[in-house]
Length: 147
Length: 325
Image (cartoon, rainbow over the protein chains, first blue to last red):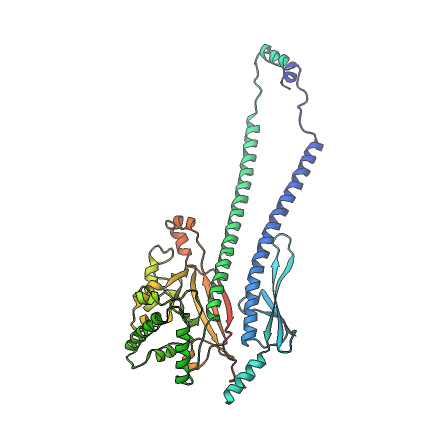
């Protein structure tokens, strides 16, 4: 290149053609998109993992509350938590495999708002537990009082 | 080819040296500065987001571990309504005698020793067995502090630690007394004493809460120290299990409403559920801790509660409330 420039008059400077520029830009854009996707997937996965861990703890709290009698033993849908309105819980009360057993299914969910994609996904955790019918304990307590 | 080029370079008179123009250099510089700024801001954003999320995860982990431990303790609570003193007495002595079969003579000896100390402390003419019965209080607590009397079988429990009179955390039976409270040097009593011990090397303000403390010990030893008002011994046995926790609240469910205080001896039964609310500050790792000491702004912000978490534990041994029926 240098030799060319020295030996003859430089009329036309060598450079990149438009096609080359566009091609490199396109490759660059594709790479950037892929990287940003990677970042957003990573951050969403970490948020989801945390929400699921918190949901499990909240579901346990709801189960304990139902067992203790804080909430009545009947199926409910989409009740919001008092301390955080983003969280909702549902309860399914079913007959268990034995006449004295009651199956409780608690589903705790939370909305996740995607910051980049503007989408709202819904995350939930479901816990099931078999408990003895609380009426048995109540009858026993009443019988003990009556004695 | 290269040889020819070198030759031509040598022979050609270097009238004009090929180089970048000033404009080119400036443009290149501006572009690289832009690029470096962009990369720097991207990295700093990434680091901030990662640190925040990591810290949130740490808090979540600490909270789960705490709730797990408190749940295990609450669910092991035992309480007996005192109906018939004679009947209870025989039950209790049988249970105490059966706790250590291998050294029966040592067991009876230390039992009477514990009984005399307890009896002297309460200024009553009580026998050892009566003291044992009276000492079972189940759950007693208010909004900030909870004491649980629980029963947890231990491997190899012997009376040797009691005979040697070492410390109140040594276990000689399956009866334990566990207290949870917030260590706070500006408060009196046990909270203040544990708080003052914790102020050394504290990161936040020295008058504020220093963390969640747990005092676990043999029931009789703890009761004895409590009756003697031996706060030093109790504070030495207490441990700060979570310096991250700076707010703590307990609520007790009696079957109808949530109450602020509970005394099983007065109510005559255990609460149906206990709710624990903790307020957590930043979790600081050991590496951060060293830098933190010199950063006053970070230290001031450290005493701020970042999030509250609530957990409810049902007591399996509580009887259902019959008041509303």
